[in-house]
Length: 134
Image (cartoon, rainbow, N blue to C red; front, side):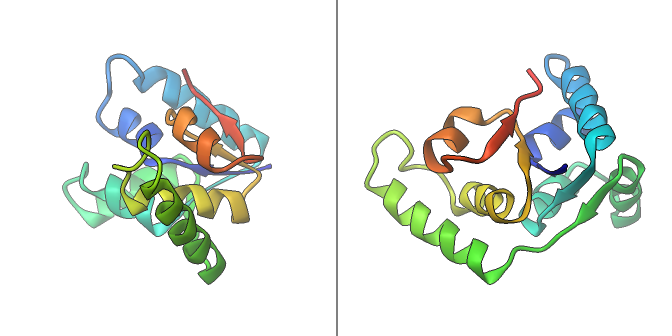
């Protein structure tokens, strides 16, 4: 199984979050054991900020078996369409396009998304299998 990993899970691990860090680390291990892990450029950029250098960052992600997988044009188009539709929805109208890019990438290029943001993803990406570390 190919699992896309959301920024929230990787930030939990990178920042040693006291509430979610260990659960996210365990979920990453389980997803790795079940197949492969990928992250798109949006996740790459968001998580990079938690490391002092590019080398430290790439070593950390390689160490947990996550490989870089860019968005396709189809995923970018899906994200834009869903972001526009969400702008009309008061509950998710303040979401940034990055959230939709991550979801669209997972929807079109993976079997599941490992994320703590399950409510948002469930509401906008029907049919995408979610793995919640909590």
